[in-house]
Image 1 (spheres, one colour):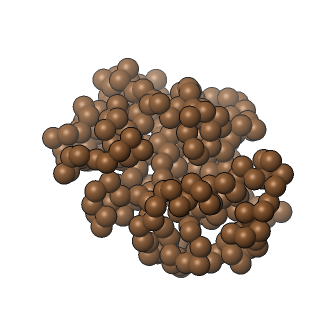
Image 2 (cartoon, helix red, strand yellow):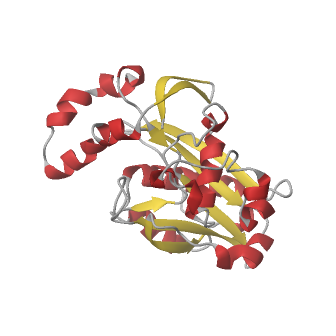
Length: 267
């Protein structure tokens, strides 16, 4: 996993420095904090994340994170279909909760420098979580391929998306530090702009073992999207990515979008 050791923000640009950290170290420390809150216990939190100053001290603690991204695919009917997953009870993170898909921890496969780009994790998670590339799942063991994202190894849907410009849009919609887990979250938006993709590959999209179910929502059904946003099953990082993705889709989606407005406030 990539551990954030320094971060700065200025003029809409987020800059940071990372190091490689062990998932086991995270699983036995920071990952327990959310379960402590659920159980009404705070012993580990008092030691690892006791106050707001410790949240912002990313270099002084183990700060790993991910790239939860809202995925929207153009359809011939004149909308985007938005994909939402219910997380499996078998996963370590956000088990049984709602989340955007793809969702994954930011970390390298076998090229530590090249994989540091956020888009590398987003595309890899698309392949693994929606397009059937199970060999990219690092939880099952080491990756044996020298170049697992080489064009010759891509799934048919991903090869089609990468085959021409403007078929696929990947954006970072926001950055946050999670006050529950201490993780960093780079929220993203993945938009398939070419509606031919749904016609040709819509039937090939299938969530992997990390999801207990996959749900579809139309960007022209504002009432259903409002009910989705208000659902209390959302993971905190999932809701963060959903709201930022909805706000951005309203800006770029044109006639394909009839979504509720998203406004921010400080309480």
